[in-house]
Every structure is written in structure tokens, then in C-alpha cells.
Image (tube, rainbow, N blue to C red; front, side, top):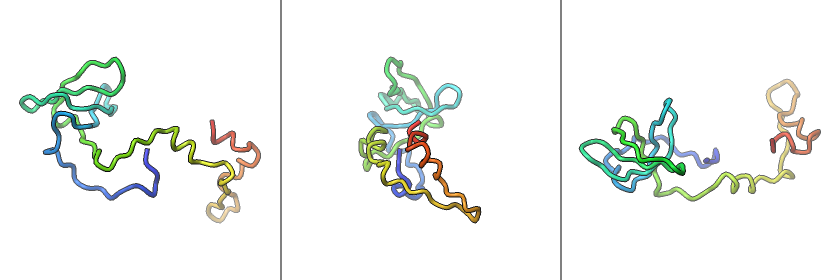
Length: 116
């Protein structure tokens, strides 16, 4: 997960950096992308170990992988992001000309709606 202020500009993917130990996204069953790492490269095919536990290594071609930029990546877990949000910092904001304040309903639920 990345905060909006940390989003960087798009840059072309450099597949020449993909090798053993590279962290990648791999297209899985049904077109769903999953995280994994390259274990072996053999004649244009990549043997990939998925990060989910208990998964067997799978073979994929370059068309089914997307290299991840791990140089600047920090280990941020979703729980770290949850802890950084403080309920007292929440302020409803007026959206458009309707006079309705976005998030105003939070005053009635005491933040419970966002936590769900």
C-alpha cells in the first residue's frame, strides 16, 4: 500500500533486471496478480515461488511477470498504516456545492463506520 503523496510518476519497465532473487508480480489463475520471487531462469522461462504459504513453484514466461522496484521499498504492513490514522485528526470536508460534508456521518458513529 502506498499513500497518495508517495505515488511516483510512471516509468517504463526494465525486464533486463529480472533474474534469480528478483521480486515480481506474476499473473496467476483467473488473471489475478500475485507477489513472488524468481528462483531460476531457464531458456526464457522463469521458475517463480509465490509468497503465499504452501504454494509450489510455477513456470511463467516474461509476458506473465512484472518486476517490482524493491530498491526504495520499505517494509510497511497494513497494520502500520492503520496505526498512523488518528480518529481525532478526522475533519469532515464539504464536497461540491451541495452543502453535504463528506464524512459527516462519522460524527454519529464515532469512527466505527471507517473501522469496519
